[in-house]
Amino acid sequence: MGTIDHDAVLRARVLLLGSGQPGRGELLDAYRVLTEVNPKAYAPKLVDALLSMDSRDPAVRLALSAEAVEVGRRIEAGSPARERVLSRALTTYQWDLFALGRRGEGRAVCEELAEEGWSGRLATVLAEEGRFREAAELNERAARSGGVSEQSLSPLLEWAANLEGAGLHDAASDVFRELIDVARRLADEQRTSTAMLTWALVHHARMRETAGHAEQAAAARREALTVLERLASRGDSKSGGYRGEWVTLFVLSGRGDEPAASAASPMPPFGTERGWSGDTRNAFLGALPGLEAQAAALREAGRLPELVDTQRRIGIRVAARHGDHPYLFVERLGPHFDDGVALARRLPDDPARLARALTDRSMFFVAAGTYRSAYADLAEAVTLTKVRSAGSASRGASPA
Image (cartoon, rainbow, N blue to C red; front, side, top):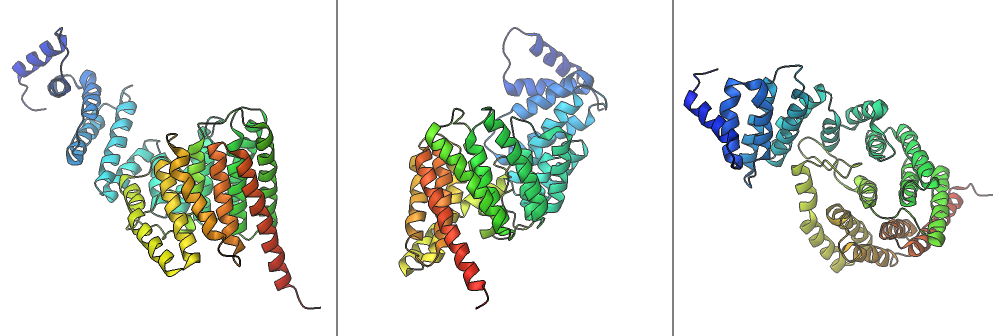
């Protein structure tokens, strides 16, 4: 501790004891002074004051959060306030580092958070860099230590997504089945939206098909169709407020069409709608103009298969940007799904792309609460899949 300026200490105490309402900057200066003489009482207040300062300049925000971390680390171990303020300071600091593209430093802060017992953010960052197995190990510890609740199935979804990213398809399927079991029970008890069960079943069908288990995929689709039929006839008493889960699963379904993630070129943490690092989100959504230009060129050239795929990548980004906002939900997103189906119908020899486009639109209709249209699209997609599977079997059969 340096030499104490007693006049500054007196002014700070007078400011805090005065009848007026000090500004944020004044409070910050006062707490800085008083922390030097009584850190136990004022260090937590100083951290809160630093993190409450507003600035549009990312460099200024970073300097404030860095100071907050330094102050938080100096709080005596065992102090009741230390865990709260240090967690908040470290969390804000890593966000500010990622916002400036300082990924290595941000990851190091996330590792410190994990050492303190808060591993969720590190799992997300590892997934962004393609380190799926390590992320899944953190997900498992969080989920098995009470991270899954009836209010949120997100821990299981993120864990399954990272297992699949690591190529552990059967393990991913086991975790996802657990998610489906919980969603099914809650839907049966009318404690959550049946929409979540529908989305989960359809995504599980995609997972199983990707892993080469066509029969399991077909069973998941049949159950999804049954659930949708019930929704179309009875409606959903718990509809609304669940579109974030649809966005997460839709974005996750497109991971295979995107470049592989790495530390040098991170991708979104597929499997969660929250917690994307600033640099990752900006890069993913920032690709929209380039994809739109690519789609225009493909349309002009009449290259329909590539156009269908590119339009889907565009639609995923639009959903990531606007999908959980209720305002103009159908108007913003509907045209992307209609266009995808219309384009795929122009490929009569490619039932797989049409089935995928119909399934995508069906799940969008579920998010919009338009269950009859959702059922019609999924029913057609299931029929197309059966026809495609039958054709593949006949082509693979040995001649008599």
